[in-house]
Image (cartoon, rainbow, N blue to C red; front, side, top):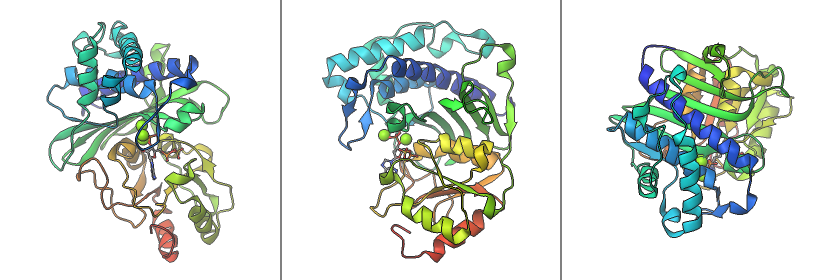
Length: 355
Ligand SMILES: Nc1ncnc2c1ncn2[C@@H]1O[C@H](COP(=O)(O)OS(=O)(=O)O)[C@@H](OP(=O)(O)O)[C@H]1O
Ligand SMILES: [Mg+2]
Ligand SMILES: [Mg+2]
Ligand SMILES: [Mg+2]
C-alpha cells in the first residue's frame, strides 16, 4: 500500500468491506418483496440504505470534517417504520462487529458498537453535500447497479475521495466478480483500490489469510482495435446500445459485447478481463446527467491502470460541478492505443442520439 493517503485507504477499504458483507448477506436472505420504488422508479433496497449508513458512520468518525456526496437520503426511512427498523438492525450488525486490527481497523471509527436510529439516519443524510470545485469530499454509491444486485448479477459498492475536483482515491467492492478472471466459476469477491500516482491494485474482498492483504497491481493490456470486445450496460435505458453496435461495425470489432451492471465494468476493464479493452456508455439522448458517484472511483481505476477516460465527445470528466457531471455526456474508457480512434468513430456517427 502506498504511503500517500494511507489512512484514507485503510478507512475506505474497511468501510467498503463491511458494506459488502452486509449487501451479500441481504442478498442471500432476500427478500425481493422488500424493494421500494423511488420517485425515479429505480429500485431501492434496504441494502442501499444500510450500506450508506455503515459507510457514512465510519467516514464521519474517521474524517469528521470531510463532506460526503452520497446517492441515497433517509426521507423514506423517516416515514416507514418497518423499513427503518430493518435498516437500523442491518447497519448495526455490520458496524458492531469488533475492529479487525490486522486489517488496520480502529475503534475510533465508530465500529465495535451499536448506534441509535437517529444517529444512523443522520449519517445517511450526511450524504447530502452539493459538491463543488474545491476541498476534500467523498462520493458514495452504496450499491451501484441496483438492478444487477436484485437479479443476482454484478453490482458494486463505490467510494471515492475527491480533492479540488480531482479523484485521488477510488475503492470499489465487487461481491459477485470472480477474483481470478481466468476462473470465472471460482471464488467471487474482488476489491479494487486506485490511488492517484500509485496505481490500481486488486485484493480479495473477503480476506481469510494474511496473504490476502497483499495488493496485486493491475495494468490494462495493450490491444489493437480488431481485438476489442465492448463492455456495456445491461439496461437499455442507461446507454445507447444500438449505437455501440454501429460503432463496433465501423471499427471492425467482431466480438459480441459483454454486458455487465455497475462500475464492475471499470474494474473488469482495468484488469483486462476477456479482452474488454473499452467501456462504451453513449448517452441515450434524453438529457440524462450522469452522477459523479457513478464514475469517480471507476475512472481512477482506469487511469491508474494505464487507460484513458473521457466523455463521448472527448472532454475530461469534470467532478467539480456538483452532484452531476453537468455537460459531460456519456463515457468512453479505453486503453491508450485505441481511445482516440474510438472517439473518431463516435464523431463519424454525428447524428446518433445524444452525441
Ligand atoms: N437514463 C440513465 N442514463 C444513464 N445512466 C442512468 C440512467 N438512469 C440511471 N442511471 C445510472 O446508471 C447506474 C447503473 O449503472 P449501469 O448503467 O452501468 O448498469 S446497468 O445498465 O444498470 O446494468 C445507476 O446507478 P444505481 O442507481 O446506483 O444502480 C444510475 O445512477
Ligand atoms: Mg440509483
Ligand atoms: Mg450508481
Ligand atoms: Mg446506487
